Image (tube, rainbow, N blue to C red):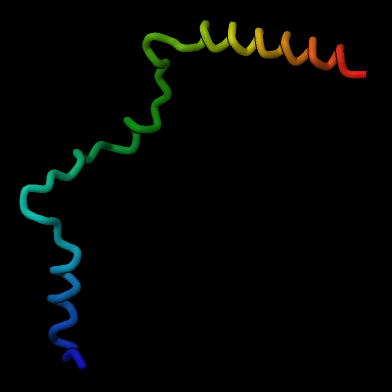
Length: 65
């Protein structure tokens, strides 16, 4: 059985990163929660595609008795 004095060092060693591993940069949560528009905006292409899918769905519903 492991002695209680060895448990903490072993747990800390298991949680440590390998040498040379880069961690992501930490940023404030306020900057992550800001909703900025995407550039370029994908909305025009997506709206046209959605409208075409709606028209196709409507045509299929009209054919179904």
